[in-house]
Length: 103
Image (cartoon, rainbow, N blue to C red; front, side):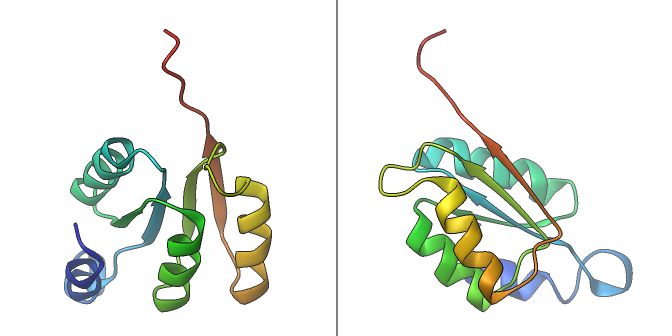
C-alpha cells in the first residue's frame, strides 16, 4: 500500500480510528510488500520501503511504533540506520531479519 494511502487510513481505521504504524524495510520488494500487506490486513498501518534512506524519510513523515527490517540492506547495516532513526524519534520496538536464497 502506498504511503499516501496508509496516511489516509491511519485516521479512520481500528479502535477509535487508530492503527499502529509499522515500517517494513527490505531491499527485496516482494518480501517488504507481502509482509506489509499481511500486517495491513491484521489492522496495522504497514508501510513497505526498500532502502534505509527511504526508511528514514518515511519515518520522519510517519513515526512508526515498530520497525521490521532486513539486516542485510545493500547500502547500510540495519543497526546503523536504526541508531540514526532513534535520534529523531522514539521507537517502541524493532525486529531485524535476514533472508537467504540458500534453502
